[in-house]
Length: 77
Image 1 (tube, rainbow, N blue to C red):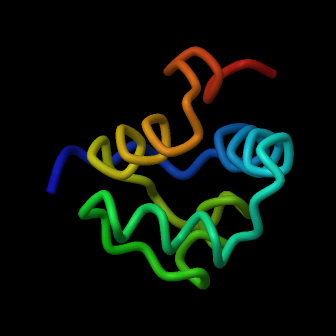
Image 2 (image 1 turned 90 degrees about the vertical axis):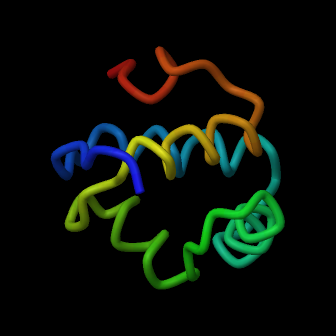
Image 3 (image 1 turned 135 degrees about the horizontal axis):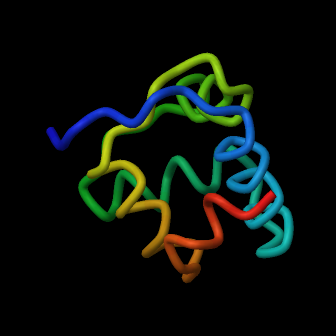
């Protein structure tokens, strides 16, 4: 697993925003992440979106790929 990135509500808010833009539920995003080899449950995704769980660089990369966004999109406020 890659390096952990400190839990940050703005990262979680941006994941939620982009997931919504793509019309995906947490369950659907979780399933797509698992297909891409990133084992994140819906519950874990909810904690990341709430800013209460750290996210690894590998998880960030997988979410970026599934949502088809840039790294900058995670950090825009």
